[in-house]
Image 1 (cartoon, rainbow over the protein chains, first blue to last red):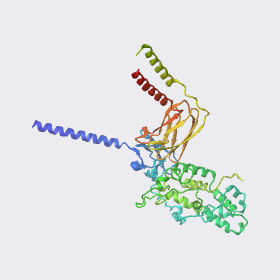
Image 2: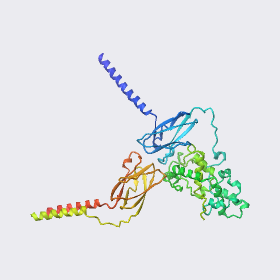
Image 3: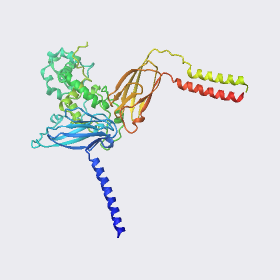
Image 4: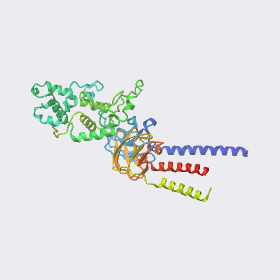
Length: 329
Length: 148
């Protein structure tokens, strides 16, 4: 009888111990810490956060391997560094419901851009349906995956400063925003060449005029913003000089995932005239926000604001055009 | 062995040993040069990992990260570089006293991060040659001791 009782007590004690350990373990892992890991080791854990409008969301974060960083796409915020062995904290305020994307801002391998998560923000304002607007390239009916070789190439780098001296000759339609976004520099040059009123200008002068028209939509502040974004987000693959020879370029070129839909190709060389001068700004805009299917190019739509994307596009033109307003020759 | 022979042996061995360990090395031309090193950092190594310079050289290091965020610091120098992939970081400093200084990755880059090291070799490696000389002397003295 006594022996039986002792047996039961031992079993009970063992059960309590096991449950206690399990509960403590659960409490520890439920502390609400956001773990950052290399994408191949899981990326953000957890990858889906929730928040409510008007209630500040405080996130405690740590890294399990290398230096990462936290930022929310399209939000005006300073990225927060996350170092292994250290705790970082960030408090976010949302004034509109919706699905936000948070991402790592410091390159941590060729797959770094896959390190993204979402914050589902609910609350007041939900009644208002979010108006869906198709992306620009769809509204313009552009096929951003089509080949776009420039038919005409300049013999020297077109200069906006030299173009400015012929400004009075440039018909107004060429400087409009609508014209800019939907035409490649090569097609703009072609139209200028076909314009009878400009027949006395040389080919090079028309290229300068095209550069001048493009410069109207690429103010120095935008180019500077674009340069900063390029350095942080694009240079790792496309190269610091835009030549497509970034540190991950080899990795992308040697990819063997062609059959499973994860194929990658060599990053675009922005100094390649034929490729760049044949692209309309809206095509570049579309490629940036949607990414390149089957090329390894990430999609930046949920990350960059429209203004930032256009700033990047402006910066990309500096690989083809000299926007400097100082005449060098 | 005779007494005077013993004294001669020890006197010769000790004085030769002192000469080998303390004699000043011939001074090479010390006009300060500019040296540029482009170091590729990847988990968990620097390439090149050994930088040979002379005291007084203007050393420029360009750090290119190949995978994750890496850093570079050098023991004995108050320097710190951080390189993100796609953002080459560079610094210039003047190499100081001769010696061998350890390069370390200063940004935690994974499990083997503490072993991501390199070496800044300032000046020739005197110590090695002096040690080799002393070892040679010991061998010769040993053989001689046996024979006489």
